[in-house]
Length: 255
Length: 277
Image 1: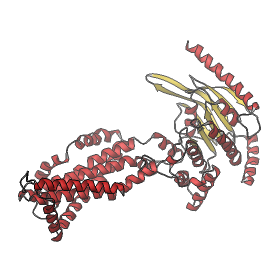
Image 2 (image 1 turned 60 degrees about the vertical axis):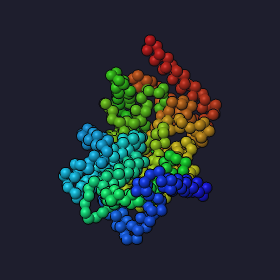
Image 3 (image 1 turned 30 degrees about the vertical axis):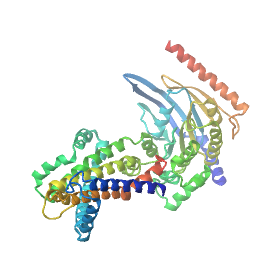
Image 4 (image 1 turned 180 degrees about the vertical axis):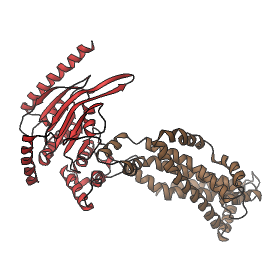
């Protein structure tokens, strides 16, 4: 409770400072709207359904792209960990492309796919895939050999070994890779939505983009806040429970 | 359990007459590369282990005793020679020969019960109820029933080794291979486990090959103690320990045996030092 109060007062102070900066008229109100104006915009957007619709569209793009990235990335990561041929080829490529900021895929996607859904999907998949491959590979490589040996003597082999020993042993790495993949997917989708200016199916990124076009600063800030909140919620709802479980089982943290 | 034990023992008495060894190690050699220098870890080692015998392999570290254990387990292949288990050549690991490693090697993603169940799940022709019952039985045997659902990291070192013992015993292997399983434990826990392992060995008629560098431990546990000499790894000498069981590691009779073996171990070390000069 005490922690909650402290955190709450921290954010309250932030909002007060913002309000004070607005009142002081240091910057033009066009550039810095008041917290109240942002809330008014969010209320309006929520009431006419724009916000809900945009969120649903964005989340759908994100989940589809993320899912494709995971489904392709996990097996590719396992292959790179298992065979040198894959490590030298796909592994090296993944390592290289992972360093490429995902927004760099946008120009290529625009030329290949035009202003389409496919362009956005492509960017999200590229954002997710490489980090999932690398995390899976690292995870598998870090499995202590003793687990394999112990399992071997108990009669585990091939698929059983992969699914009941190596994958679970690599789970902490794989989950942190999934989390990183999620963060990259989220970033790349926002980049894609801002640059791929389709006229139907507005996502949050597009709302952000048109907010800028219209110099509607309260919209820009409002949408940014929504994006932050979604990121936080995804972490708390999806990843935190998994991480808590891992920490408890492996004994890697006090929490 | 007593009835089963008696039935087994009469069977072994018969077996000792016709005596096909439980384990037959025939001229096993194995070398490694250490940098660019080849090291002969095992040089034509031969050894027969009878059914329900408790064999201890002792020697300085690096004398190839662990390598031999891994070869018996099927985790490593010999360069030449072969290992027969029940008269059949060993080609790979198998659950009739379970290994208990120096580190507990328990799976952190499973709880205590899940770990003991792991090997049982790989054993066909059992219902899940049977498997759970067997797992519970062995957890009881090692005195950890209360910790069934504990996570591995919550256990002490001694408890972890008990769980690994239960895990190794649960699929009912005829041969148990133990690689310095108690080396990392404190003296008190270790002594307790000496008692436990002798009891289990007697009750379940296992054939045990036990690797250690602790001479007293070897004298306490083994029917026979085989002394290894290093570079190249060979069986230097064999000692029979014919003390009644259960043996107490601190007993005077046992100390006499241990002294005899230690003396031999030291002379091996001296011979080696001279050879090195």
